[in-house]
Image 1 (cartoon, rainbow, N blue to C red):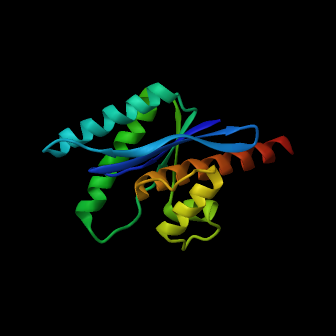
Image 2: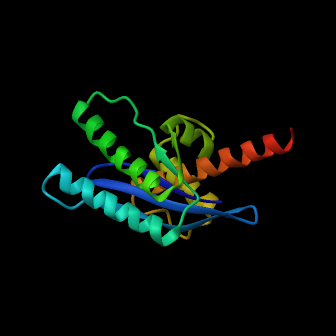
Length: 164
């Protein structure tokens, strides 16, 4: 199972591809998409093109996207919502399943507590994926954490269904 995690954002979006290989989680690639363009439409187009390129190159089985959380800044919420919509669109166009997870679910799955800090998430991502160094941005670390969260959920569902 190969999962593309996406931490959506208009000017910066993290992505991380994790695959389960013989019971081990392996990071295939990760990074941060920095949207180019002067207008929101141009930035969204950049995000779409770059996410679609990752999907074409690595052919994930599934995508995990961070669900929008409540924020006081309405402008930020709208922009993150637009970026999330682009990620969902890329998944739909590629014919891959997509699941959304909230930040607390991801932190719980990766660190063991929903109140984990960004540094704790990054540390555990590095440990779980046996990375030589932590991802260079919190966005990339969060995207890898999303992929790990989805793989954990997928494993539990598969075990539960096998036991029926």
